[in-house]
Length: 506
Image 1: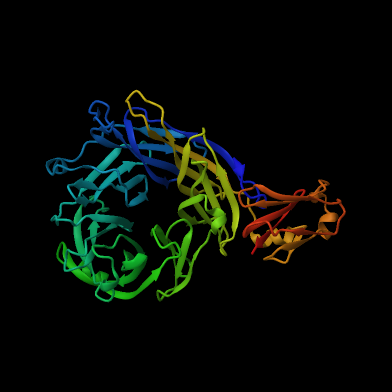
Image 2 (image 1 turned 120 degrees about the vertical axis):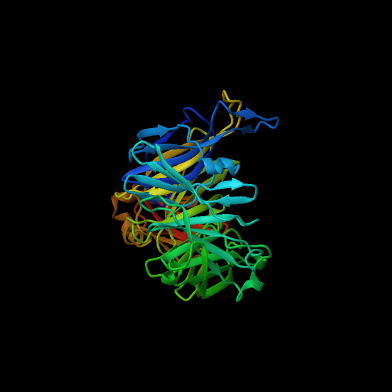
């Protein structure tokens, strides 16, 4: 595993593994890693080899089934269940098939619940699969038996308590209004009843929305309040908060409707100007939005944008960041992940920042010289990270599939310290910072510290860990002045022996 930045403490891959399908031809692996009862689960889809066919373009078609892999915190496989799971009769009659998309997830006691939507034409309808967390066996599956609406797909879903909230609708349906359907799916009887529909009024900002757009993601704040995002005109993002009367909704007749009240809405252009990815609620109630590639925005409780910038500057241009999460056991730190491209090759990549968005751990590593990408991360109680990703293989297989992904999982120990702790312990200091054409390196503390070594050299590295400049010094030198005019603008690290200091070239 290669360290990029010489200023940061090494992180360590404690173990890394990949697994192969056993019984089914594997067309796709879901990008999410699931956890429950101290174990981790990978849900993927396989094609039954008996029904598999390869068309003229090389695409494999056939009956698709959900498959399960469970492993412990040491990466040991507990089971890999690839049994054939039939569709329920009503779904067979509706001529639908399993779509390779998983939305809502919940672990309750020893059961794992997934919303694996079914497709029929342009429709996507929620269907809840219940699996045993002990052996991966299918316990139950229920499809929602509700009235269909043309061009009205369900888009996302969230489990909240014993209900499933499903976001659906299109601006050209329901009088230009989206909606959220609430299904009572996780009861003792495992019902599939549509309880009520929540209509989202968008009159106040409809003219700011991109034509034909719809609410494409939502976040439950509590059981009667939620946040929804829309695609606005001119690369703008529209985020709205709604509230509804849950007591009144619960007393509606089956599949009745209730209007949600608009609490606030915000229209802004993200620093990345593209790609909404995810949002989370912070402990103080603010909303943290990740747009794309480390571009973040923070909205306060009234929807005001109080932060909107790219966390990673041009020195991280080789990174593609697809997602992030706050670290639970390292409060105030965030993990970002995706991949790092160099010479057209993709390596696994994980960046960790503090709450001021300073990068405190920068990690990229290769696996089997393949094209790799991290797709999800979970944090263990000891603060380590279970990393899940995919490696692209282009060798031929018995099925004739010449290009396929094999899931990868690993445990990463992120050994890092905060920027403040680094500054307190630094034996060398750089001034001015930011700097123009010259810097002065103060080595007074370094001269009395064995950690600075006796290399007799001051080196400057860029954020990729490449040495871009070096000069010789006497080991007991108190200070040294360097001309950095040839260096491009960006972040750099001065290194003397085992000590480093960070500075910015303006």
